[in-house]
Image (cartoon, rainbow, N blue to C red; front, side, top):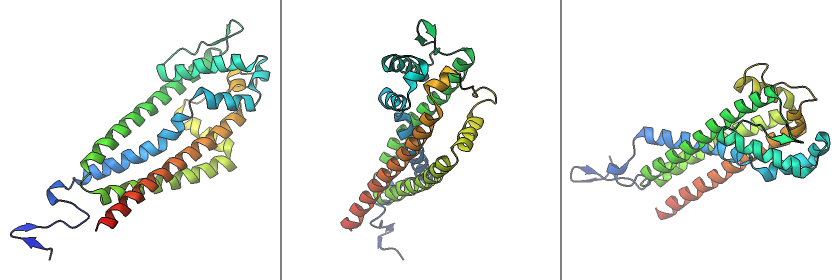
Length: 235
């Protein structure tokens, strides 16, 4: 039997006041929001001109386009902006649009996906903050949920990272087949889109995306463990 005070049960050290225990759905929402935030934060941060420029310079993009790195950076910055604002991807090189109509159509599809993921990220962070506040009286429970989300996402990211590392072409094709219409994303070697973002570029950035997810999962696990140890020390 639990200790009683009159007719009211006393909470254990993990719960806090019984009247403050959050419903089960709040815990589920917290865990799902945490998992989504862990998955999306790192990869979305890779859409920045500094990293993209470094990868393009590393793979000789400027030489393949017959221009210099400054022009590559200028064109790429416009495209990165268009991904997030729904632009038309009519960036010019030598007074001509660098992409043809089919390439711009694919980048429009990519931009739609990026904006959906960014919206999901913002929603996940908002839900995470709200549910974390709701679980404020149950730090041990909150820590266990965060740890579970981090371990699950980290394990999946590790498995997918290995798949991309050892079978990149198959993984790349599967990803595009999942998110884009067949025939809308395949271009020949003379494509400026391929010259701007060659296969080695995508191989390395895919591995970086996986690493960023693992790093975020490790950080979340560390925060969860720290919170759980603090609760245990107070008992």
